[in-house]
Length: 313
Length: 220
Ligand code: SF4
Image 1 (cartoon, protein in one colour):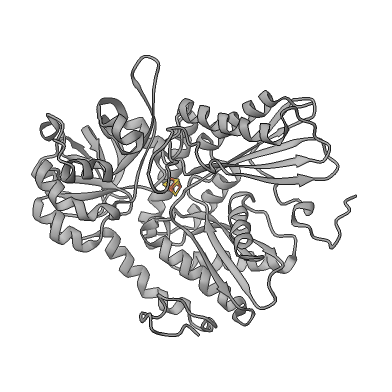
Image 2: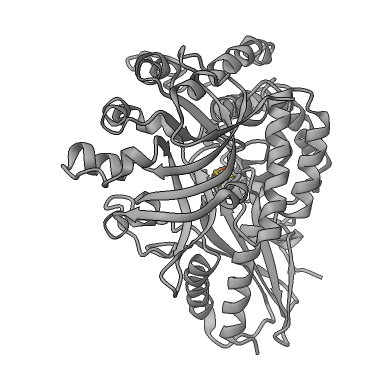
């Protein structure tokens, strides 16, 4: 039986880790991009960022003072047993968010959209968001937190089947160019594309593709995997680098997630995770032990529901 | 290598005049934060500037720090990151006149026209943070909090923080006293290539406003 205290502590710990320690896959990805960058200004920006990650880890301070919008993704095994029920998990996460905000410290970012009032702890109405997923046959709980920059780099559009791959390329260019100018989306970044589903699913898939898959991970559909690489190259040949300066460092990796959609449409969303690609995951085992990692492993075969009737194995 | 400059604050006119676009700047002295909360309060709400502000600092940082009050009553400053400056354009002329501020630091610069019409004529320049998520490096440069104003009224993000800083940076010079803009110059170079990126890609079936400028148009 997993106690609610263990869930709270694990949620608190990953809030800290996400804010301070850059995930290794992204750091390696940034270094690869930096090696290819031949422009002085853009290259200087990336070198400074790498120094910033080092300073954050050495000093145990957040790599970016803008907390973004801290939130959680929870994957619960069918066989997991936990003491406080589902609302207990959500309560634990609210408490962990408030405590981490004070202790790290994280900037309290969450305000009421109209009254701009706040509780100074990143907790409020519908915040932090908690998204749920389930996994057959296992008895653990995975908790992931993501702190994504909040304002720039995301767009949605309803395309149509006839727009095809051209339409996808166009929209990707539109989004990267418009938010890449002056580096508003804090590129180079991991880009996520959501394709299909209903409009809200499309947004969610793209966001999760950006935030919950690691650099180097490819979509299991070989043709989509190929498209991921092709679109990444397009992003990096815009001629724009870090901070919108002339350069080639725009996209560290690009992930596509798809969902079956309306026969008449092809909705698309594009999301850029930022220079502070803040994610951290805790696995809480049935015996209450906790293991930490930076790969959320969110998109399991079950999560994608790749077969018509999922029976599992 | 980009040129590196270390500036003591308050910055003198000569030091500011010698800054070149694209140079890397580090600061020593006192900088203050102010964004829409402070601007509204003072320019529209009738509050007075904190005493001594003008004498101690001429650098306005568009920033909201990650700060927390410790048990000993001091502030723990973790990361320090700029916020996008273009939103504050409408306050700046009055603000510079009132405070004698000569350096604005923020994220992403201001429209190039503002440099020519607002900053340069007042002897002021814009420095941009680098990256922009360099919160940890900038946090290292903050040695302490000299004062904080309107913390209760405006909250941590919007309050006016006065930071004592040393080797605070890096920043890049975006504008000079002639009103030139590094972002604008770089943007123009990037723009030259943009049309060709779309070559051979067919137009979308349904347009959006923005692709047509006339809202009376049908989008099909
Ligand atoms: S978008 Fe930039 S400034 Fe915002 S949280 Fe991310 S790295 Fe920080």
